[in-house]
Structures are given as C-alpha cells and as structure tokens.
Image 1: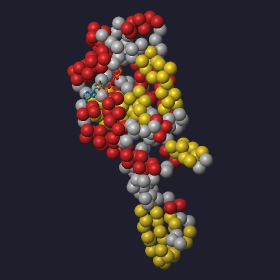
Image 2 (image 1 turned 90 degrees about the vertical axis):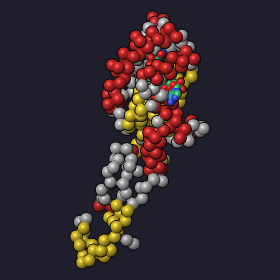
Image 3 (image 1 turned 120 degrees about the vertical axis):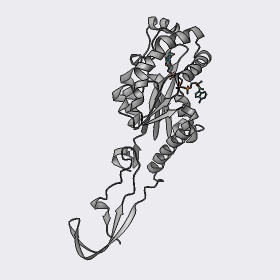
Image 4 (image 1 turned 30 degrees about the vertical axis):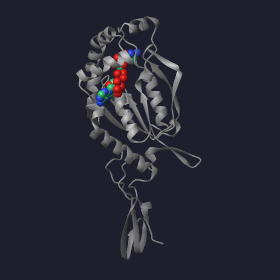
Length: 290
Ligand SMILES: Nc1ncnc2c1ncn2[C@@H]1O[C@H](COP(=O)(O)OP(=O)(O)O)[C@@H](O)[C@H]1O
Ligand SMILES: Nc1ccn([C@@H]2O[C@H](COP(=O)(O)O)[C@@H](O)[C@H]2O)c(=O)n1
C-alpha cells in the first residue's frame, strides 16, 4: 500500500484513507438514487453499517439551523434552501476532514417536514474505504471540492426534475402543491442556474439521465471495485520480475554486482492520485536471487 493512502499504523493495522466521491446535481436529478444503485451493485445495502466498505453522506445534514422567523418563511415556501449560505460550510469541511482521517463521525439526519436538523436520529458514519457525499452544492465550495478524489454530476433535464420533485415533496416532505411551486419558481430554479449548474464543469464524470444510465453506473462501480480490490491486495498489483544477466561484473546501485540479478518492477498501481502512472522501480526493489 502506498504511503499517500495510508494514514497511520495502529496495532499493526494500517488506517486507510477513504476514497471520497462527490455526487452533485440539481434537485431531484437522482443523486440519492444513483448512490443507492452504486451501493447495491457493490453489495453494500444488506449489510450491517459497521461492516460497510462504502457509505453515503448527504449534504442535507449540513443545513444551518433556522431562526423562528426563517422557519415561518420556510413553511410557506419562502426560504431559500438552494443558496450556498443555507449550508454550514465549515462544519461540512470539518466533518469530511474527520472522515478522511478514518474517524467515526456522527451527524444529524434532516427532517424536511419541520425544516430542521434531527439530533434525536443521528446518523453514525463508520470508517469506510469509499465515501459518497451527495448534494446540490457539493462542488460549490472550493475547499470542499478540493477534497474529492472523484467528482460525479447527475445531469437530468429540468422538466423531469420538476416532475419528480412535485410528487416527492408532497408525499415525502409534507408540502402542498402551492408551496412547492412557489419555492421552485422563486428559489430552486434560479439558484440551480446560478450556483449548481455552473459546478458541472468540475465533474470528472457527467451522468446523463441519472439512475437510468446503467452504462455510466456500471463503469463507476467497476472503478470502485478496482480500487477496493487493489486496496485489499486482491487486485492486479503483483510485481513483474525481470532477470538480468550481469556478466561481466557491473557497477549497479553503488555496488559491483555479477551473475543473474532479479529486478522487481511494481505493477501499474491504479490507486487514486496515481491513476495511469506505473511505479518507478527503486534501488530497494533491486534484489539478488537467493
Ligand atoms: N430514474 C428514475 N426514474 C424514475 N424516478 C426516479 C428516477 N430517479 C429518481 N427518481 C425519483 O425521483 C425522486 C428524486 O430522486 P432522488 O434520487 O431522491 O433525487 P435527488 O437525490 O437528486 O434529489 C425520487 O422520488 C425518486 O424515487
Ligand atoms: N427544509 C428544506 C431543505 C431543502 N429543501 C430542498 O431540497 C432540495 C435539495 O434536496 P434534493 O434531495 O432535492 O437534492 C433543495 O432544492 C431545497 O430546495 C427543502 O425544500 N426544504
């Protein structure tokens, strides 16, 4: 395992830095559905939370608390939940930093019916190998954007998003039609154009049609599988051995050597930040056969 992806060693066990994936996109574009599909394809859903290698965190857990006046506005669809100021950027940053250090973190869940954070139903995020962080503005804040190892943007057209948001907000978020449409026209649509849509350019992978795009999801799942396999040592990380005949005696690595020399060349390492770059053989990897 390379040092870049290892944080510390405790009792002989290396604490591994998670691979952090940002999943952005407009409201009701299918961000949560895409994350659920990825988790399912990786066999992570029917599993105890403490055992999961892949976890999802929602940006909703980082909405700021509202004052009584703001809450009254929110109930009429007159509060802007789509503006970057609606989020606690610092808390989001500190939480992701803790996650990247391999710490267990506790975050509140979000209650859309009361427009408030729910500390009674906290979510425990256990250390995992891969962390998906999804939300409308996860690429907006530069400090947070820079933490991601991979950035996905779920790109679903606005008619489809509105058609999905209206029934969802009425059935699952306790809203009435008037409030949903007022909020959409006053805040959601303009804020999408001003703050969310421009962040598409930061994405490494754009997923048109969201969860319907099985080809894109399969490719992402395969990339995560490769990452997990490499990390657990089951991937294609075995060294390539090259034998050199040093005859006559040759100066190598500061020593005079002769005979058959075995050179270990570490295989192509597809860990994040190292993608596509073969490791360079080091002096230590030049070993004499027994
Ligand atoms: N591909 C799809 N086909 C049909 N309905 C979908 C699809 N993707 C998401 N939905 C529905 O649309 C709504 C919003 O999806 P969701 O994944 O919660 O979006 P987001 O997390 O971006 O807000 C949900 O009710 C969900 O079930
Ligand atoms: N109290 C709240 C908080 C947020 N919203 C809306 O939720 C949208 C983000 O969630 P998605 O699952 O749709 O990505 C965002 O557009 C907010 O308008 C809300 O209505 N009430």
